[in-house]
Image 1 (tube, one colour):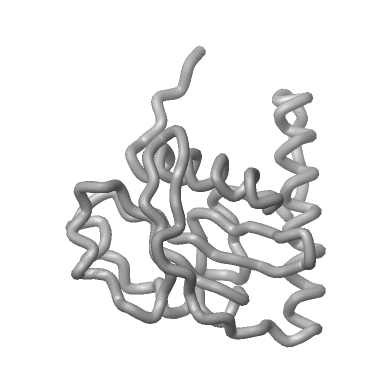
Image 2 (image 1 turned 135 degrees about the horizontal axis):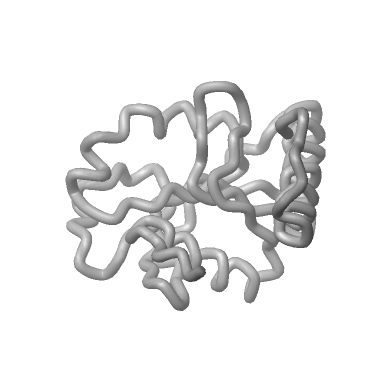
Length: 149
């Protein structure tokens, strides 16, 4: 059975492919803390953590009220949109990635706001556990898990 991906998920796939070319590993739909869910979180080769919010339309962007809460959970924050998105709507203080379902390009690097060592350790551990759980579920989709990551 083939699952049809939504526009934001297609952007996330293209972003993740590009991040992989930069040696960043990524996870989609990651929950750094209760009440927040980022579209893509990426872990770099030096332990840097990037959050990428994928916006598939003007309405998608305008209906998002939580994005500022993501800033304290990463070293760099980016918007990922397709080439037809009106980028003038996006705040200038985030990075800008133009993406499609197959690849992406970073047009503007965001400023770096280094995480505290304790938060970086917690997020890195949570990232690893989340990625391992996803891999386990892909190998054994019938498993019933009693606790969430």
